[in-house]
Length: 182
Picture 1 (cartoon, rainbow, N blue to C red):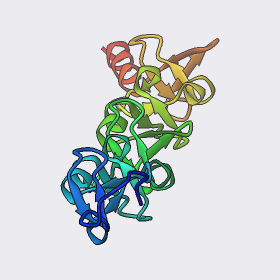
Picture 2 (tube, one colour):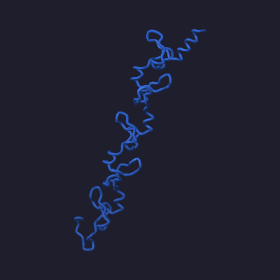
Picture 3 (cartoon, rainbow, N blue to C red):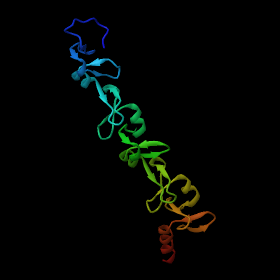
Picture 4 (cartoon, rainbow, N blue to C red):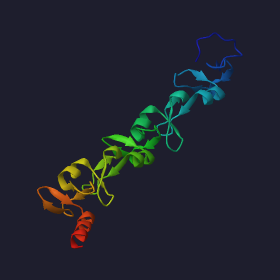
């Protein structure tokens, strides 16, 4: 109840903290600050977390991907924000790279998978082999060689070893042998 003195007609009524309107005790809503509010002011200022029911200031509430208001604790438990664009995602729907969450669009824009070892690589660090497949730096260094003729990466299995670390890709090898046959 309020600390204010009241006449006998006002007993059982409380003043709304926000607008000052008198409301009956059975119509009072208590906000996140534990002060009394009329229904109209309460609806403007507060929300009840969809998950746990906690009353929070609307300006402090977070929104789920389904546009439901939730408190910060429930947001941290169930949701994340995309590292790049800030879009809200459910934790189990995010793509993670080095424990950083990404939405599908940002993940596809920034990352790819090495076709040899399956590791996730940033597109800025991606290498392409002669077949246009994505290769990580480690695989490029350990399992690929550079064709001396065209400069493209070719897997050691596909490369033609000519002499003293001189390799050709299958296409350049065939072209060189066609010229030699003529």
